[in-house]
Each structure stands twice: as C-alpha cells, then as structure tokens.
Length: 305
Image 1: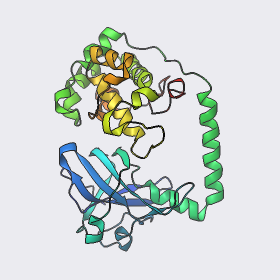
Image 2: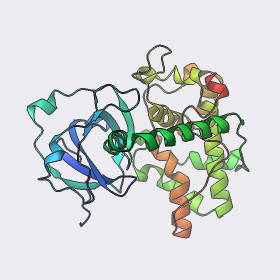
Image 3: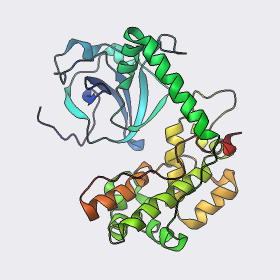
Image 4: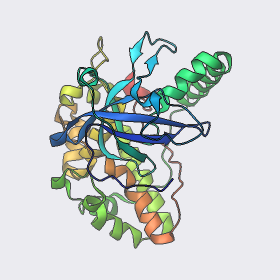
C-alpha cells in the first residue's frame, strides 16, 4: 500500500498501525480540538493480516475493553500532537450521530504508533489469556526488581553546553513540530556522537528528577489526585516535564525546587526527539541509546513514595 502523508487531521479520518504480532489495527478520529492540537479517537475492532480499506466493516465497530480491571469500557481517548510517521492513512468516513455522542476524559498521550493496540490486547485476553497473563506477571516482576535499584545516570554532557542547546528551542511555538527544535538539532548534530548521547543522558536525568508525586500534583487540570487518577495521564506529565526543561535553566531549577512552579498546561513532547534527530542528521542512522535513568512517569520510585 502506498503511504499517504496526512498533514491536516479531520473528524472521520481513519489510520492503521501495525500490531505487535504483525497484524494491523485501526483508529478513527471523531473530534478535534485544534487550539490544543488534540484529537478524540476510538480503536476499531479491525484486526487482520492486511491493511484495512475504507470499506472494511470492523472500522465502524468500537473495541470494548474487558482485560484485567477493565469492565466493558469503550476504547475511546484523546491524543495530542502530530501523528507518528508510521501510521497509515486509510481514508475518511463520515462521523455518525452515535460516534458524535462518544466522550472521554482519558488522555492516551501523543499520536504514537501503538494507539490501536487495545484491539490486540483484547484479542489476547479472549484468545490467549493464559500466556498473556503470564507475560504481564513476568513484566511486572522485572519492573519490580529494576525499581529496587536506584538508577544512576551515565556520563552526562556538562550543564553549560546542555543549556546552551536548550536555549535554541522555539518554546514560543509550543514546540510541537520539528521546526521548533531544528536550530537545536543542527547545533547538537555538529557535536560528536559521544556528546549527543551525553546530551540525551543529561535530558533523561533532568526529566527523572521532576518525576515525583508532588510535581505531578501541580500541573493544572492534568494533575495527579490521590483518590482520583482518572484525569491523570502519565504521558502528559512527561510532556509537561519536557516543557519545564525546554523553558531553560532558571525555569527548570525553579520548578525542581518548588513543584508549585511546574507548567500548568504546556507540553513539549518533541523535546524527546532532539537527540535522535541530531544523531540521524549526523550519522544517517536510527538513534538507539538506553539512558541510566528512565524518564517515563513513575520511574523515580523515591519521588512517588
């Protein structure tokens, strides 16, 4: 299938993505909030070896989640930012009156290539539950063992150079597009491969330090609440932490030392691509690097206890 680049996302747009087992799933956009570059989508019941066509019947059906603690919950959620380049645009189908009534307070992060995985997980739950549960238990055990060891950063780029690169970001443009980080990418690409990795290490560590419960409680409408996690998105918290770094040294240190100074609504997901874009520009290869500290939400165990 020839890949079609879709720049302007509209209600009714349908996108397919490859699932972990090589089959394909799909999602449909049913609402857009252009001011915040956000889109309400649902995961369709399509799961086949071939990429769907716009006529595929399952594209009109919504996945109902029942795995683990889910209880007949529709796979409907919001995503933000640009859709991943690996998502395949299938076509546009009229949003039905029923689909217009669908609501959600769940934020599923950015337009990553795994946004249709719900259909795969539900298929595993219905057809391969024993192995699925075993894999999840093993993964949880590995994570528990990893959390017992307090992570330490590897060799990091010196702070002066790190912040000089960050100062090149166009934070006024909400840093959603590659253009907003291009000057920083070009400057970092002129450095050695070792320094690019050290930049990524420094960034990961700074994001890791902001990954605490108190910081998560102070990010505006997306804040973490002890007794109500329904509005808290781990991905959004990560992107807000990215924005705190993108604002520069003074802002970052103010937020680090006083969680009440955390950004309230702004996000900067694209910052996570800076080192990889610089590496690709320099070497023409995909960037693969594992930092000593994981920046994903809940990785800083001390910060959440």
